[in-house]
Length: 312
Image 1 (tube, rainbow, N blue to C red):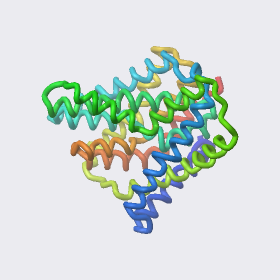
Image 2 (image 1 turned 60 degrees about the horizontal axis):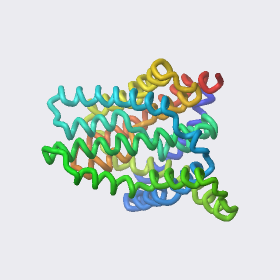
Image 3 (image 1 turned 30 degrees about the horizontal axis):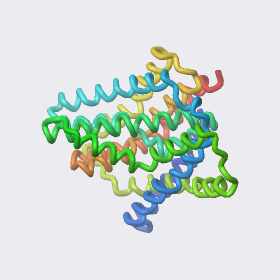
Image 4 (image 1 turned 30 degrees about the vertical axis):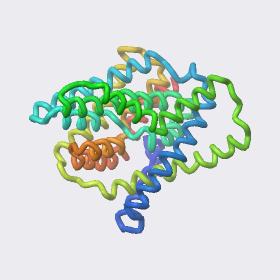
């Protein structure tokens, strides 16, 4: 367990460095926004495309994997939604809180860290989790909030979803990379070197950007944020593990990667959605801050817990 903690420490140290730089005002909010944009649209996209282009499609899609992850995630999503409604919150706030409870920082934190901790075979399962989060649950929150405001479902919602998915560079990079792989196209050496160089900037820049963005997050609504952090860091990996290991009998290695992904802290894009719709942004902000701080320990514990699956 100590070995795993020491391996994760450099990742969280980079996050702490970004936090310190932004908290001291050495790194401004504008600088953080531009760094995040560079990572999101260029560095991380190059990394994802290169991984996907070198990955056989057969190694990516696994129906049992998808069913297990959807089952575990939907279960926790339902718990968070019911608790929000019992607290007399509307559908919009319930949708945002449920998103906090199940959507982890797979792109910026999980992709680089879990590949280092669990090996390059983790690339396929991590990208599958990322795709499900973005396509299924990223669409669900838009449908729930827009439908609640309009009082009905309309074709306009699906046009908005389509535009959102097509403009998301992570989804575009995964799709283009898998198409490249499916067509069995070789990657020319200069192109490969370019993608390797640009993608190499993704890990340090993404982690620094996570920390810098945390400096502007508030710690208000501590009780609710604490509950949502518990749901994300504890309940989500537990129920995903139940789905993967006992209900759908996923391959042990893939199950380990899936559970580790479920243990990641609340993703920053949940805050972007909450701010965009004007629904509980301070609650989300606090959940991201608390879950990221606690994940320094919990991620190591979960990775240690699933390590026997990797070796089996």
